[in-house]
Length: 54
Image (tube, rainbow, N blue to C red; front, side, top):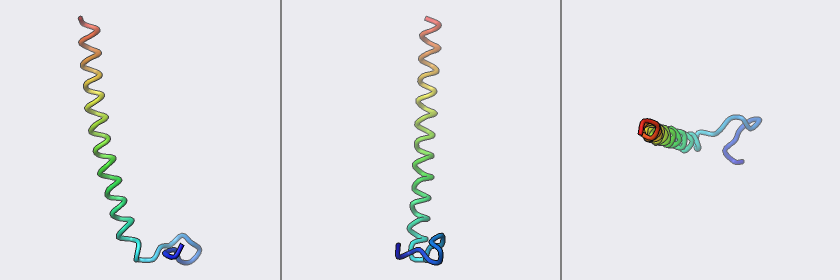
């Protein structure tokens, strides 16, 4: 790959901004998924509680 240097474990500066952007986007997606998971868990908990007390 053209952006790797040395033994292939270091990258040239040309790709660092792109990788940082991808990293930040992953963090954002993880946060969104975590919120969605929490909301779904809350719905399941309330629904289960309502059904067992009906």
